[in-house]
Image 1 (cartoon, rainbow, N blue to C red):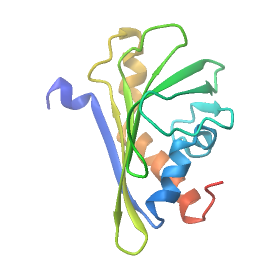
Image 2: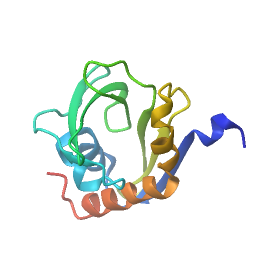
Image 3: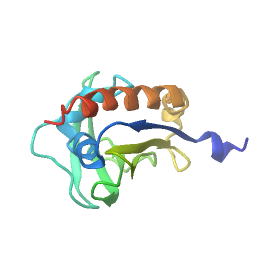
Image 4: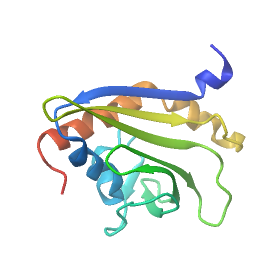
Length: 153
């Protein structure tokens, strides 16, 4: 496996909920700590619902740090990706992506990807390596629980 391949980690699963409901949980940063499988997110202020490329939302991490997340990919109900950074600093180059593909019977195939192929800050490499497919799957599991129980609000 090449170095570039090891720097893109993904997990997928089918969720028994419509894509629109799942996407609301992802695109509203205030909801993200509820399903974060990395247990890294503490809080995001309400009212930051993402609607377009270029939007920025702010998140407080469990250890107290603040991250600004710039949306770099957006297709309502289907795809969203952001690049996090410490406020006032350049983006270090890693990316979080969610892709939703509706399938029959109000079910959705959801893929969660962490891509650090462009990560330039070597001090972040240990944390990047620790972001495994199992951690991404944990986020999918929690997200499924919320979406399948219609807890999108």
